[in-house]
Length: 167
Image 1 (cartoon, rainbow, N blue to C red):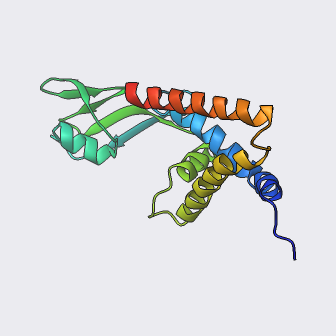
Image 2: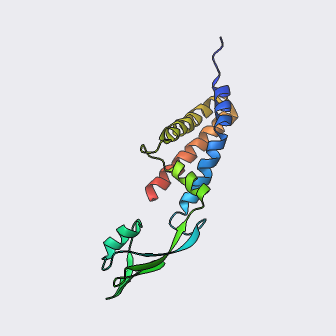
């Protein structure tokens, strides 16, 4: 039985992973804007909490990550897109959330070992590593295409190193 060539393995694994690569590309773009309201849907929230909460207690009660109050007086705590009345416990704010499909895609992209699909991220990362390495077996090493490809690879590695250094 003939061994599968690197070229054939590269090709069919690429076809197999085309869908997941599209998902990761789209969710990666969405994640770039995670600290903005781009792609998000707003909804007004009004609820009653315990009275006389301090800023950290308010952030914990609202379950808002990196909660930060803009200002505070004797009766109110004001924060981005909302306010809390210390006397009555009433809070009113605007919540921004991704649509369900985009939210699921970004959670897939950010999966950790606590996620039931973290193995997909490992498989996908290993596949991308395989694509990077196996691309050097696509052409004869003495060919002009291969030599040009190596130059582009070196340029890409230098660019990546510069981006890592300045970020």
